[in-house]
Image 1 (cartoon, one colour):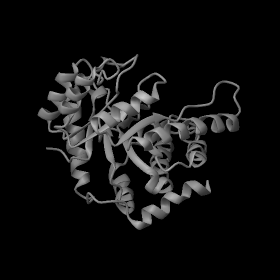
Image 2 (tube, helix red, strand yellow):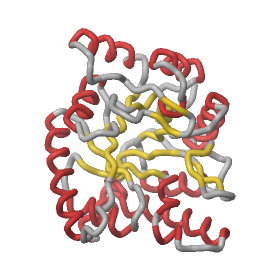
Image 3 (cartoon, helix red, strand yellow):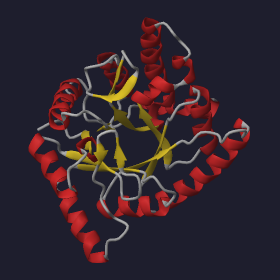
Image 4 (tube, helix red, strand yellow):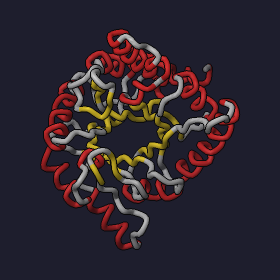
Length: 293
């Protein structure tokens, strides 16, 4: 069994049915999972992947889904590719998920950054209100743009139920990293950026989306340990902060099961260096950095 803090994202198992993906997750040794609740465009480069198909369930169907997921120690939800955020949170509450990841979004073409932040922060506060009422937390996922804009958005939200889901692979698409044309410098910048973001977020870091970045084409969603992200250095930073959230695996590897197992093994080895504990006082103080961005 892999460490229970490691959750296999069902999108990593493209081509499987929901039942098949859940069975495979257990067979491969995963004790926790992450999934989209439902929604359109549930596919990526390897084809369609299973969701929880929550939207059309009867009350009896919802109970059956909750029973099916009760075999897992932890469940996390990733937003669907729609705007039905009430349903994302309803799904999380139904199956006992701890965090719903919601994308940060990026300004529309021609939209001023300040206007975008005000608009998006207001929406995330509404989402946070509903999540808090249902015992769920919201992790806002970085998509690109600048580190400062991402941190500034979180600081503007300033909601107790809203924090960060730091996507390690997506850190490769921050402008400060992409601006570097020299491959070696870009790798250094990516790893420095990841560690800096962890320190800045502190206790506001609710969860991590974990995958690697291939240097040759700067493509993410690769098997962990196969690319350029310095995971041992990252785990040293996480240990210092006392990180206790999930490591949610997001892969798009053709050899799905082998990549999932290798990633699970790699992360479990690193998790052994970190006690399954709550955030330390030092981390709680670090989380206040957002209010000063």
